[in-house]
Image 1 (spheres, helix red, strand yellow):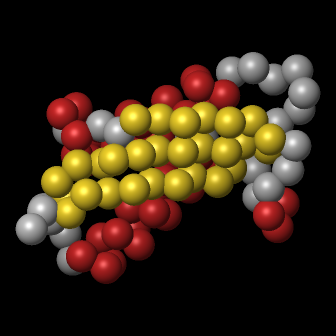
Image 2 (cartoon, one colour; image 1 turned 45 degrees about the vertical axis):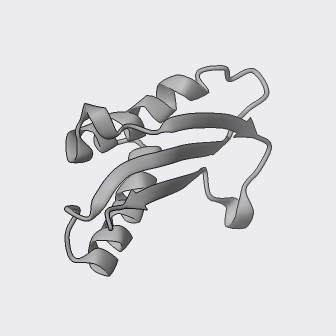
Image 3 (cartoon, one colour; image 1 turned 30 degrees about the vertical axis):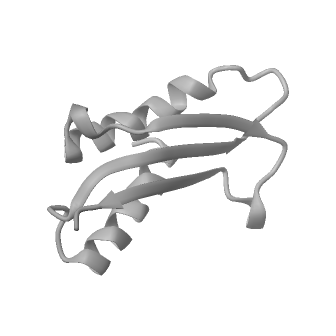
Length: 91
């Protein structure tokens, strides 16, 4: 399992603990993946694909988000990957 999959899994774990289930999620609005990379690394979208696939497996293909994928020189506390997810909840 890649590090970004662990990062998105952690977000899903927090969401599950907060809501009690995923049934209240109307859709996933946004996935932003930030990766600490070397200057010559250009496969950031392929790395983020694992998070998108995980979201598809949990919520279905019709609820997939828009994506933003960025490679950066460093992230807080030295983490290799930071994932931001925004969810729309059903009323």
